[in-house]
Length: 236
Image (tube, rainbow, N blue to C red; front, side, top):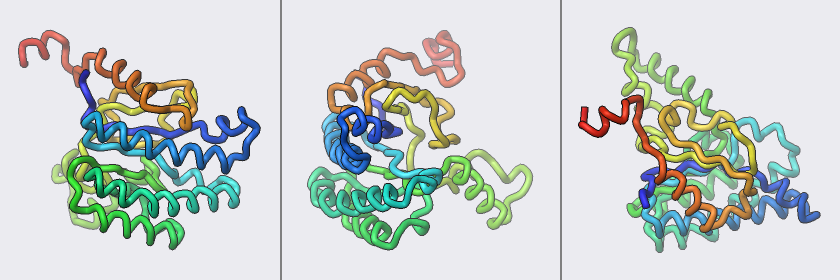
């Protein structure tokens, strides 16, 4: 089976998962956080090199304060528990997004986790936090201007080098759980030629079997990147 080098996941459906079980949204988010560990471990075992998880968007600040507080408490708890496991598996932790805009406890935990795992090379776990695809592009453009680039000096490569994801390959596969069929301002520049996989399964239930189903679907596709099948076949 062809395994993507880079998988990006929009983890959606924690609240609806909880509602269906007459549980609180907080319990849904906790179940979702626990599933992160499962999917990270599975991706590592399958040989995925990069996994990016849409963890908290800029738009998520509009949610109730109690829910936001719960989400960041779970994040701090997750980092504290998972850093030793990440190190043991050779997984480097990174963040894409505006890290400085996060609560102090979250910033502190994340920076500790990134420093503790910076030498790991088997896989990279990227958490998209306080992230907006449009804002990322604007940030990169402003950096181009600040660096004095104009006219023909502004190339795709120059813009790409100023994105939060500059050190990452573009995602081969983008997965969204919970039945929603949109990308919600996620990796807008990077997803130009990504394959998309949408599933009705809520994120807490998206386990290894569901992931393997997504990868089997991905493996059945022909990625042409704008070329015809004949061009690919003959190497043109």
